[in-house]
Image (cartoon, rainbow, N blue to C red; front, side, top):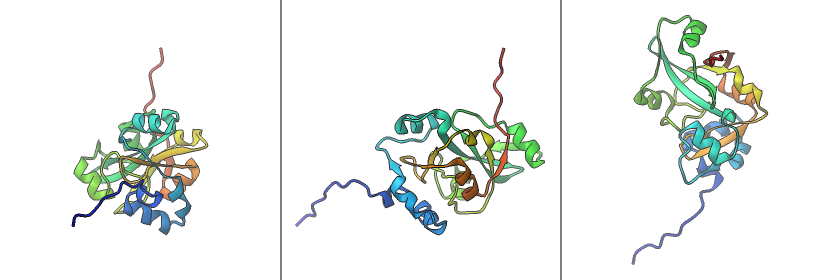
Length: 175
């Protein structure tokens, strides 16, 4: 006879991408599993994530991959700001900085755009974190898929990501 399927609520351990869940264990952060929040609707953008969580846009930590002279570099930026590519170029002494293509993001991190966490990637990359993240007690970051996020103190996030603190936020013009 046919199998009966029952709907189940995803457990906290399945809310995160398996690679990210394994990274949490390796980093001694297993307790974060129970703090991961999974949403039925995608939280691919910082605005979607902030609306789902109910936090300020700047409390979202975006994990963005850039090609710096052709080498992938992860930049962690608050959700309300944009990365200034010229500041990244100067910070790293590079010739050219561009946003990485989707296939490079997946190949480098093991995750799709919209779900890239700040750590737990397939390959080791250089990581820059904008100081703007430190303006909050807690920030929310992707947990490896576009439906799950987790909270963490920004200083801890920067430490676990192995990031260098920098000022690469695009400055807004004031009149």
